[in-house]
Image 1 (cartoon, chains in turn yellow, purple):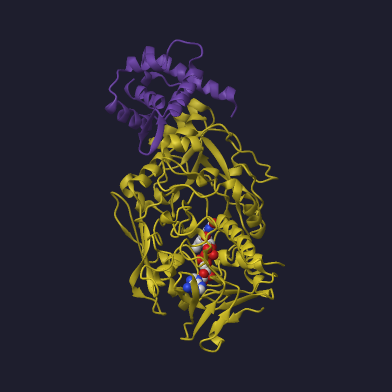
Image 2 (cartoon, each protein chain N blue to C red):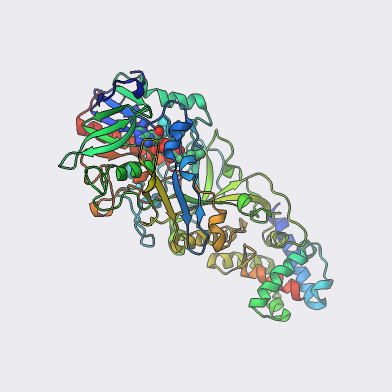
Length: 510
Length: 109
Ligand SMILES: Cc1cc2nc3c(=O)[nH]c(=O)nc-3n(C[C@H](O)[C@H](O)[C@H](O)COP(=O)(O)OP(=O)(O)OC[C@H]3O[C@@H](n4cnc5c(N)ncnc54)[C@H](O)[C@@H]3O)c2cc1C
């Protein structure tokens, strides 16, 4: 069916389907791809049109404060409006496309990490990771933490030491990287007979029946037109912040909102702390000085047409240090030599005297996992958007655990690099300037966390909302812990897995 | 650069330190010693010594024992330091304790 504009439907249209998907980003569209050509009538309600638009985008405005012990708060008001895109295709319009599967340890319950543990492991998710790779046009990643097949470049790490290499690859399905590949992904579901995409259709309320199941959705257009949408099953796929916002704002039937009987909706927001030496240290002293003459090309993250690797710490090293997962990504651009008389020059030359090779100075990019913190959360603001909906407010709160994890991981990398004779590391940030040094990621995770126990989260292992039997959630908001990989491959795998589950639930066939 | 060459560099360094033990490091200007930025090393060395007051002779005896395999031992000692987490942090740099002591020796010799 061609894509229909909800603004041109007669007022109070009742839009009906077997399955109603709210949000046409990578998560919602991946489910639509899977259901295309089946005997299910699928409705996808999307706030935006095919291309980003300023007025629609402003529906995403909201507040954001980033805080942490000993650091000055960062009132980052623009974050909610600039870290995602409200249009068909969602943030897929602008995302970098960098992908990898979560490490096996990211799924594990780790005694030293509070609130950690997924209901399933990486091995169980492997078939859907493979299909997600196919959907996003990526090479498939092997079952272990190895590199994708056909990778000719050699890692400088082994499978025994504390330092490991973890694979990454770029998806071309990105409006920024390859507009044609992205348009093909965005537009294909709408060509299927059974998929009915309605653009400019903002879901503003999830209404419940007395038994707690979803009864219908309230849909509004910026023109003032209103509709309702009804289905047998509903999937909320509006992104890691908006999923929580819509559930909290849907408080007409239950004051705490939808799916929020235990109060977890909006809590445990996790992004990824990112620190790059190039930004954090304008003097240019911070670097990793490699004292090996082995080829580092595998770690070059620039080429988009082949996989590359980032450094990670082994599970044993993470446990030994009591830290979360973290990565060190290299920039292979040569860096200016150290000034005479500087500490940097002395360190490099001392390391060279010990290890042999003249050090190669490289900038690096450090990314670290945050511990789920119930006080790091999305709440509703008193301010409203153009549709009268309360804006989201993000209180992105770090704890001492995060600070210890960050600095502990940096020390862990320094240790591992030195122990293997690979190099020396300079970490550029003092604990009280961490927030000032951050480049916040655009990864929004954890706000509708997955848990086996309904008392400890929002959705179950099938991504079904614990107390709302016909409502499912797709997207990174279901991640109980963020792990340390960019989230989109995993959220796509979960979306495809959810589509399979729905097919079983409804007995959907081709 | 080959391992052989790196060993030679190390040998030169240690030779320099050995000479230094007899004649004073300031006078010993082998290429490898000269290659270590004395001013930068002094910055690290002073900082180390402020926390670990040690004499030049003690450092020298510890770092340059009379032994044929001294260079390799120094390298493996540095790696062992890192492995065990014996690190000295100066201006954000994570050095092995042995490297920091080496800088201290350069500073006070
Ligand atoms: C600049 C940038 C770079 C990034 N780089 C990477 C990267 O390299 N790798 C990576 O893995 N991730 C990256 N990300 C994150 C990645 O883009 C997201 O993880 C992913 O796109 C999320 O997909 P989604 O479908 O869950 O959510 P979204 O993309 O947010 O899609 C949600 C959809 O729901 C619609 N919607 C919202 N509210 C409503 C409503 N009330 N009613 C109807 N529809 C609604 C929106 O218009 C949108 O289409 C990046 C993000 C940005 C912004």
